[in-house]
Image (tube, rainbow, N blue to C red; front, top):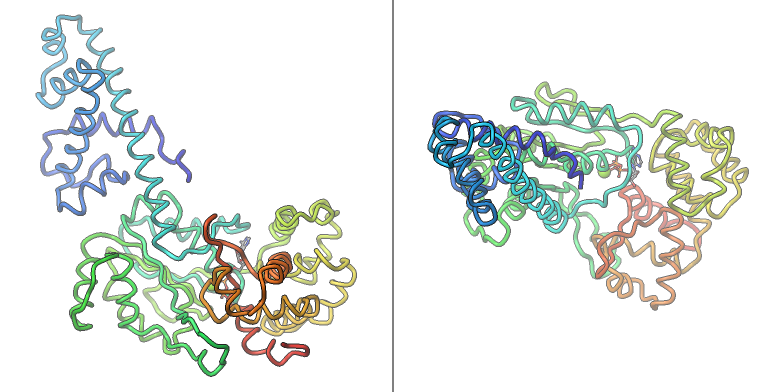
Amino acid sequence: MPQSDLSFNKLRDSIRQALKTWYEAGSEASPFSDLRLFQQNQWPNGASPRQATNQILLEALTELALTHQEGADLLRKRFLDGLAMHAVAGRFNIGEATAYRRQEKALDRLTHILHEKEICLRSVYQTELEKRLDLPPTVRLFGIEQPLHRLRSRLLAPEPSWLLSIEGIGGIGKTALANSLIRQMALIDRFPAVAWVSAKQHEFLPDFERAQLATPALSHDALIDQLLDQLSPGVSFTQPPSQKRAILSQHLKQMPHLIVIDNLETVADYQTLLPLLRELANPTKFIITSRHSLQAQPDVFCCTLNELNQADALTFIRHEATTRGLPLLAQASETDLRRIYEVVGGNPLAIKLVVGQLSVLPLPIVLANLKQARGKNAEAFYSFIYWQVWQLLTPISRQALLVMPLAHNPTLEQLLALSRLDLAEISEALDQLVGLSLIQAGGNLETRRYTIHRLTETFLLTEAIEWPNSP
Ligand SMILES: Nc1ncnc2c1ncn2[C@@H]1O[C@H](COP(=O)(O)OP(=O)(O)OP(=O)(O)O)[C@@H](O)[C@H]1O
Ligand SMILES: [Mg+2]
């Protein structure tokens, strides 16, 4: 977690400012407005910014008094009782210069207390975010500074745009960018709560029957249910849909939420969801990821992702090679890497798949194969890459891969049950599939979860079944 975002000196200035304005009751802005401590005090209690600010100061002063009674008393007299420094010095029987020095020391200690509390709160928040939301794992991203900056400043602004879209072709990094955005500390400070809804609906399917895979699109009601579920976990909402909609709307109007709707394009008539999002927005903001552009919608701020440029693509290839334990590729000459870029381009998912192939095959063969696909559109290019990778898979890996779409981010136990492979076989298969970038292992130490990319899933469901040697 980027704790360095919380500067000690800045916090100290804010505390001094907050103490100085102790009695400014009507003040709308708080020097603490960026702190989770503040959000925690203000939103749930409906406190005014001033009340929330003073509450934070009071609690910190009480804590300070436990270890440094005199410092806490001095600050109270000076700021809460509003005494001039010479009067404070008189009460403590010390000179004015000494009183100033002690005030600064006490301010330092007060800052330490709040700094520690805030860092602790942020870390709890981060952990809960991971636990509560089904987020993709964090990975290092390349070449996204510009879109990240554009979106970040739009999101931080207190005014429109309320709806922002990240758009671009499959595998270009829309979900990855949204994931990186909502973990940005500045945004965590700006939005007290975050939700993440995948418009693509997953259902656990007991048997591998393609007919059952026609999953329902995200309806208005399903979206409302999912958001209520994430924002008020544990509360059961048994009301009729119209009432649930009103509850949610009230919730989202009360304080700014940041909500991601991933894969909006999978909703067949996705444009019908937009009026609902507009109704729920302000002060809440929505980030939508979509392969379709929303540029026709005048109120949506659109950010189109393009392929990585050559420099970023090369850095990414080296990075992938390093993390996959492929030192020869990681240290390959710029000329060799450029040969890859010239054929593959700068689509991050395509790069990952090709690097996966390079863990098994020599570069000239991979490139010669890929050249056959040059000039094809993105979909056909992916199809080609997947077909190449498929050839490298053992029958057991194919069997394991084909059951992946049957469960949402399956665990090892689910994979064992679905594939009917034994532990040794599934371990071998996972090893190969992870190595080839077809599967990503996530979850935690206790429970590993395995994920495939949507494009991999699409190809498995539409093409792999028809490919030769499918089990
Ligand atoms: N800029 C980047 N740098 C490094 N890796 C990236 C970058 N962008 C995406 N990736 C990786 O590439 C893969 C594809 O990205 P992602 O899933 O975000 O694409 P997408 O645009 O959401 O695709 P889809 O339209 O299919 O949902 C992921 O494994 C992701 O971690
Ligand atoms: Mg995506």
